[in-house]
Structures are given as C-alpha cells and as structure tokens.
Length: 570
Image (tube, rainbow, N blue to C red; front, top):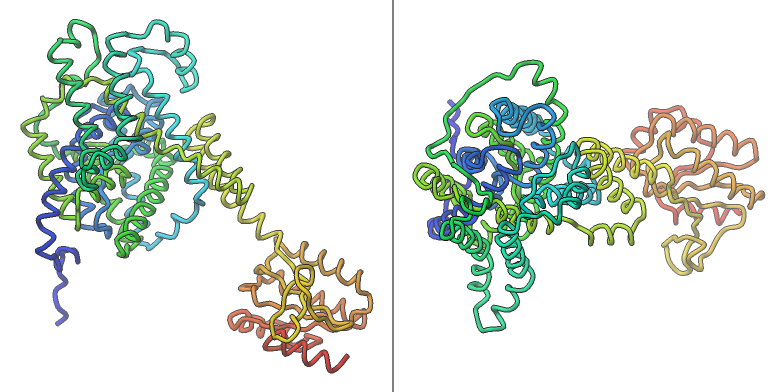
C-alpha cells in the first residue's frame, strides 16, 4: 500500500521552532498596521469598510496553506480594489446589496480562473506581460486611485461619469472645499509624506538603531490615523463640523454565504474577472519571486496560483471582495520579521479578535485620513523611473509603457490591459520579424567569428559567411531574403554561402521551404549553400525534410571548420 499523503504544507511539516517567536510577533504587528489599510481599500472598492477586515481572515488562511511563498501577505490591495470598483459601478450602486453580490461573484470567478491555471500548470501565462507593460498598467491605475481619493481629502462630492469629469468638477469646486476636512486631511497627508520621504534617514542620524528606526517608520502611519481619530472624537468634528468618517462598522465574524452566480451575471463579469485574474497572477507571482530572491528561497508559480485562487474563492463566500498579494502588506510582514506563513495565520487569528470585539472603534475614523494613506501608497506605485529606463534602453518598451498607462487612464482598465498585451506581443513580433543578420569573418589567429563591420577579420574571396541571430519563421523570412540579396548583389563572384545558425533555435515549415528555394536559386547562380553550427533539435527536424537531402553544400560542425575547408578549396 502506498503511504497516505500528508495534507499539511511542507513549511508546516518542517517548521523550525526557532522561527515561532518571530512569526508570532510579525503576525500581531501586521494585524495592527494593516487595519486602516484594509478599511480604506474596502471603501475604495465601493464596499462597506468591514469587508476589508473580513477578507483579511479566511482568505489569508487559504493562501497560507496552499501558496508557496514564505512571507507574501494576501489581502485587499489597491489595484484589485480599483478594478473591482471600475468593473461594478456601471452595474450597481456601490455598497448596495446588488453590488455586494457582484463583488463576491467577481472574486469567485477570478479565483476559479486562478485555481484552474494553477491546476493546469499555466503559471507561465504571467509572462504574457512585459515589465514595462506591467509598470505602465500599475502606474496608470495608481493615478486613477489618486484622482478617486482627492474628493475625500477636500471634503467635496463631485459628480461625473468618468474620472476626468470628476477631476474637472473637483477643480471647479476647489474654492468650496470643506475646511474642517482639510484641517484633518492635509496635515495627515503631509505627515505621511514626511514619514515616507525623510523620517527613515533622520532617526538614524539622531542615534536610533536601524531596526528601531524602521519600526518607527512602520508605526507612524498608524499613529497618524490614531491621532486624527482622537481629534474627531475630542472635538466632535463629525457631528459638529460635518467631517466625513467611516461610520458604523459591523462587528462579528463574516457569515458563510455559499452561492452559485446566475448565468447572466457570469456573462457580464467574465471579462473583468479574467483581467483581474491576469493582473493578480502577474502581481502576486512578481512579488513572491522578488521576496524569494531576497531570502534565497524558491517559489512554485503554480502553487502560487492555487493559493491566490483559493484565497479569492474563500473571499467570495467569506466577505465578498477580491484579494491579492499586497506590496505594502508583504513589506510590513517582512519588516516585522516574518519567517513562514505562520505569521499570516497569526495575523488572521488576531483579525478575528479585532472584528469580533473592536470593530466599533473604527467608526469615527475620518475618511480624509484614509484617503491620505491611499494617496501616499498609490503615489509610490507611479513608476516614472521605469518609464525613463525603458525609454533610454528601447523606445519600443517605452512606448509600451506609455500606451498601457494611457489606455488605462483614458480608455479604462480592461482596454488598458488589453492594449498592454497587444503591445507586448507586438513588440515581440516586431523584434522577431527584424532579425539581426551579420556578415562575419574570422578574427586573425583565432577560431572566433565576428561582424565584418565591427571587427578586423579575415575573409575568403568568393565565400560569404552569414550569421542569422534569430529563429526563422514566416514573419521574418522577407527580411532575411532581402539581406542575402543585398549581400549577393555586392559580391556577385560569390561561390559559397555559409549560413551560421548558432542563434537559430527553431525553423517553421515556411522557413524550411524558403531555405530550399534559396539553395536552388544559388545553384542556378553557380553557387552552393552550406550550413554551420546547426543545433541538435533543429537538425533533427531538418533531417525529415526534402531540403536536407537536396542541400547542394555541406553541413559543418562549426564556422571555423567551414572556413578551413572552403579556404583550401578557393
């Protein structure tokens, strides 16, 4: 009989006792620090604030048991919240019963998609988007997040069907900003900017240790929220001055609500859910891999998809808000000293205590301060350095960044990410269809071959060595044929053409036919076609083609062998 498989995850089966203290401490610290963030992202998604706390419990447990990252923290995140709001506001009024059902359905469908991708081992799909496209999408989304939160900082209620109409209305209403709200929100915003920009450098210069300084920087946002809330309570700013606050936060654990979505709802949400799953996949895997590299660990991309998918499915039934791998949550988790997913489990258990007995404490938390925390977090996600680097290195990547960000800003999240995928694929096809083709010769006194336009090399009269630095397929054969025709026109006395195929990893059927046509054309000119440095897998395929048997020339093991043989024949 085969042994019964152990259902416990590997990290728990091999748990080190010396990590227990660090995990317990980290779990408690994360719980305290992410409470304001969880409330804020729920409101950003158009959901009741307690939903952000709900999805910080059971979805976290699901990911801890199925994911492979040791320290990535899952929960409500800014991009996911914005995408939820953008997808659902055309369909229902935010925070309405219909809206809650749609949000839960969105989490369920995207979670099932991620689970399916993980089960089918499709983690490679996360590579569909290039880094500039991902950066452009996140940057564009971050700008939209900032625009959506300005109204809370100003205490205004602008009307508009798009973010740009809202922004225009905000500018028009700016002189009528609510001054008590500004008195709360602006100092909080400036304090958070100072904490992020300068406090981490100032404290060590005053003699504070690096560890304590980092802890102080992490705790300061919570202190800002606490002081603002105390000010609202002390001066009764919500009742006397009309400062907007979170409002009643329902206490108690989230109820389990199993449901099967209606077919018409699935039809409406299938595309937004697919976009949400793709972005969640890319963001979650990127974060997990970055953290693993820093900790010299490894992550399983497919296990990550299973963990993220399970977290969203659980979120659909316990809370009803899509979740993902959070950048700031994970950073707090790492900074707090987390060693294993036990830290996330401790955080989830501690959140149960908060939800069950302390949720009412957040009712008078001012929305302006939550908006300030979101604006600061979103501002850090606008990656202009990424645009600068992409533009300096490759204009195509820079245009992909701008195209994706512009698509998000002016056409919407779904069209923006679709445009990003098209730009990624378009850039790839553009590069593949314009391969680098070099005429090469041998460096004197060596067996190395280099471009005749870049190096002083030896050549053989009547022999043309051509290196193609790309796999050959129907899309780039025109460029290859044009370059060869140009070279042959410049060297009409050519008797031998040697294709150096060291960089050719694959040929499609069209490429093989074109090589056969090239061979026949050279024979008619009185020349012969030779191949050199053909890779094993490529040669295995060519042996089954008519071209291989009909080749007029020889197949050389190396370019140097061809140079020696043809040099003696010249």
